Image (cartoon, rainbow, N blue to C red):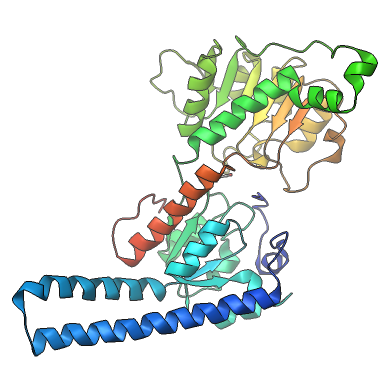
Length: 398
Ligand SMILES: O=CC(=O)O
């Protein structure tokens, strides 16, 4: 679902970002818009009536016992109005629940409602209304988009990684930025361990073997490699790296890690260089955030150090790894295997990986469970509400 095409997304690219695989038919969207207008009209009438009653009770028939209730209802009305006037730009239909709730609580502006090749014009027409943008990997809030939105106050990212948000630009403009940490940690760590086990035990390959009828035709599947007890090296011992460490401890795996600064974890061994970590690991997991220092942190030297028996797991971002180097090392057998959730140019995956039996490939789905995506959506919504109500943001980046 996520695309980590973080480098060159601009207006022109936003207009050609893929839309929902099955966008709702135009008639259905028209009906929804009419329904939305009717709902807003109805709420508007209710508010006018409530406001009238409040003012009337206060100034004409003041009943002291009911005053707090009336003030509370006036406050609720004002709050709901403030929320509904916040124009929120959604760049792509990333999550049905998030879209539905944004539509219900705020003034949702869908970029994919723009006519083909008309996103620049569409943004110009909505520029004064758009005060918030929901961004996510592959659908970036980079300088061009931010510059096109003079009223922008906040970028809320539906992700923990924020490499697709132009942070210096946001700082310069005083735009707040939030992300969705913690709620996805377990799922991403689970997937990292799953990929490692799947790559070493060749689970997808063995599954294909059975489905192809080869068990009957050829007999038992070739022997695979044990995961329990393998030395696991983790690049980045943040929230997700730590969750991976605690999981692999249950498999009796010694944990090594690389991080810019040593952490206070006596049972994990610190390596001050990634090459040193790779040379001492059977499985190397990329779990750090993407920035200029960590781009291509796994390069040819690291791959060589991991060696023909080593396995690379990447649940970070595609650009953490020099992908052409990785592909040639796998093809030539200089690297033992890989489990990859992310790629340099998503959703494009190097086709030479498709025929390799030593890799497991999944489509950037680390946080892709019903439970976690709902929790991420709730965090996006709560951050937006906090912004409107001028309360502290729940998960601020800036
Ligand atoms: O890739 C997913 C995320 O950063 O949350």
